[in-house]
Length: 172
Image (cartoon, rainbow, N blue to C red; front, side):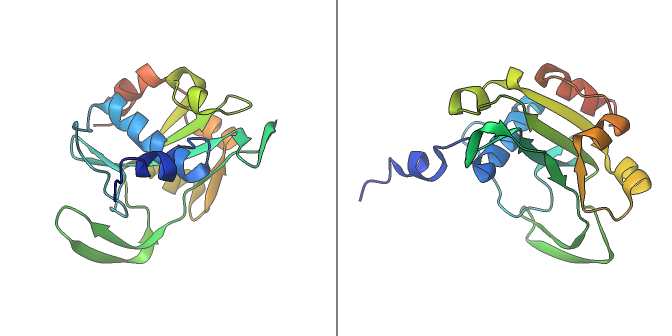
């Protein structure tokens, strides 16, 4: 069996929420310079990326959805607290009591093009990003489970793709 077509079959639609989220992780990883060529994504790791000793959680949403591409939706980002974590590098597990957010910083990624297409999802200029320290989420939003754009605008100024690394670097 030739599996050469599998990546396209499994992840070829970048507009799909799951694939767009994984693409956003890769996009931010590229901006931070933390993804090595040939590296494979670590599914279910405690954080999405690691940057200079910090855990980085990536959350993605889009104005256009696969099921209704011409109309806009109201973006929401999941920020619920975790009960447990797993470190993919060490295979260590841990429990949180009380629940908490695992990462040190969150990068919220909003794909703004309507309708969304593979081409514009792949274009970093079609995205807007907010970099928010977890301490700010905890202080301002407590146990809130999701956050929208209006609230994000009150917590941080949005940045472009090229501004991601300098914004994260300020938190190191």
